[in-house]
Amino acid sequence: MACKDCAERRKNLRDAILHGRMAEAMDMTVEGLRVMMRIDAGADHRKTAPDLTPAPPALTGKNKAELLEIAADEGVSTEEGATNAEIVEAIEAKRRAA
Image (cartoon, rainbow, N blue to C red; front, side, top):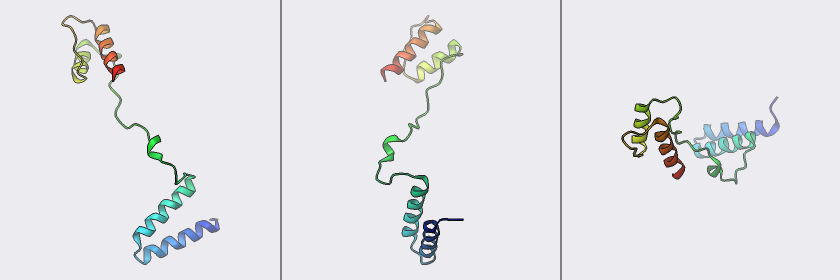
């Protein structure tokens, strides 16, 4: 059984849609979702949004050719005879500096 507020919200939303008041219907829908999800409408949720940038590729389990490719993609220069550990350290140092 729906609460009285929900029934009233549904009626108002239906009336807005039937009378072509789409902006009003959208605002009612958003406000109804905020109430149901207990989201503070005054809060700026963009500040707490997760960072959606992709994570850099993992360095473990890579062979030398793969590490050199990652280093080149990330703008890391390595010496000619660098070992895997030295390449990984150079990449990680660049990532820490960023």
